[in-house]
Amino acid sequence: MNMFFAVCCLLAGVAFASSALGQASATTLQISATTTVDSSLEYNKHYEKLDKILHNREFKDDNKLTDLRLRAQGGSLSRYSMSSSMNLKGPTIGEPSSSSVPNPDKKIQNEAQTLSGNVSARYRLDSDHSLGFGTGLSFNHPLQGVDRTDISRPFVAYNIANRVRDVQMLLSPSLSVTTSPENQAVGQVAGATIMANFVKDLGASRFAFSMETRGTLVFYNRGYDGGKASSNSPGTAKHQGGGSRRPANGGDGNSQQYSIEAGPGMKYHVTDRLDISTFLSIPFYNPMASEDISVLLPNSPTASLGLGWAYNRDIYISPGLQTYPTKLSPDLTTLSVSMIFSVL
Image (cartoon, rainbow, N blue to C red):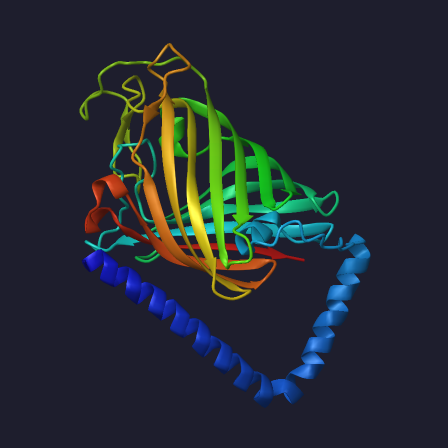
């Protein structure tokens, strides 16, 4: 019941904020229109100069993607642009003062609250295909005072937008280099990932069905070492903000060779710029300890509920809740905000 009340409060609060923002913006525009014309013209002149220098052609929108989130993930239609996708993993409902996030499966990861994601330069080949070159970016404890910043996981990605009849698709294979200390400690050096998201509108209704899939193959600089780790054993290191000890000479624990996650979702388009979505992700992984590459073990499914608001094609913001439906608890339910935006 507490969780249901929190969800209702979150949805009502965001809806109210969106309405208030729209009214405030209209009032501000009327008051300041005469004083901002000159600065707007000056800005446009500088922007046009930059476009000419870069020959920054803008491709025509073929409207293959109409879903708000997919369009933002697809990036700007300009030849050259900068893109960023960030996610705030906030506090849990049960323990708002905690500075860590739940990790029920004891995965090898940074367990601190983070504002994390990636920043990339994008080169668009045409309306439906683009290349991205970027890096991961992470800030530990953004709500308590940042105490660690990681610029990590440089990557290259190829993005494909398409539509088959009434099914919208966004595909993105990528390669990355591992640089985070938590993962380097168990010998990870690189990874290959393919992401595929699909959205199908349900007839003339405002509802849509979605499916999100992701597969990741991890590369190591050594084989599995099953040595039992002890917090007092030599070579054990404590990583700031990670909240756990990882041995340098054994005890790989839940290291994985590859992982697969997929799950369905539903969306309701409230307006052309606002939607409500829910999503269930079902993950599996192949443990590094297994000699059989076909072995798949389950991790805890995750479920999310959120609002999504698009300022335009290039900016999408989605506050919401994330939880583990098989282990429902306020201590495992976190507040989150995801942001996708492009410039140029």
